[in-house]
Length: 125
Image 1 (tube, one colour):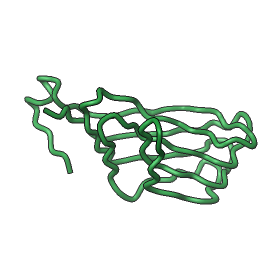
Image 2 (spheres, helix red, strand yellow; image 1 turned 180 degrees about the vertical axis):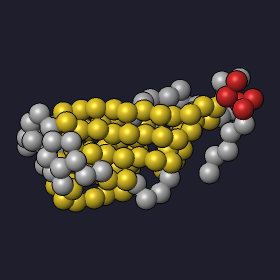
Image 3 (cartoon, one colour; image 1 turned 30 degrees about the vertical axis):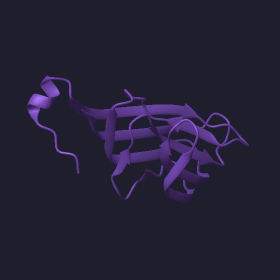
Image 4 (cartoon, rainbow, N blue to C red; image 1 turned 90 degrees about the horizontal axis):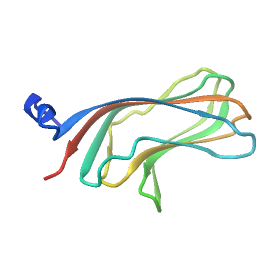
């Protein structure tokens, strides 16, 4: 667990992550939702990650880190129903230069997809 102090936040060496990202489903395609990209010297610890398809169910969800070349899967779920949130069971550390990614398979064109992220970021010295 990354612990941050108030003086680190004031000096912009650390901060909180609270993002709600949205995408739309496409039939027959794996849809990706990428989290924010930070400075290459920033480590992220995501303590709460939730994914939901507000419109209909989907067949597969993979959550992991993406470094621009490789997708490192951390969690995987299958056969989620519509408006059923999927939460990660563990904190996920996102290495510097990488971002969090959710891949959804089996969505329908126009589905309302959401990725919710909460955690902290710390600038490495």
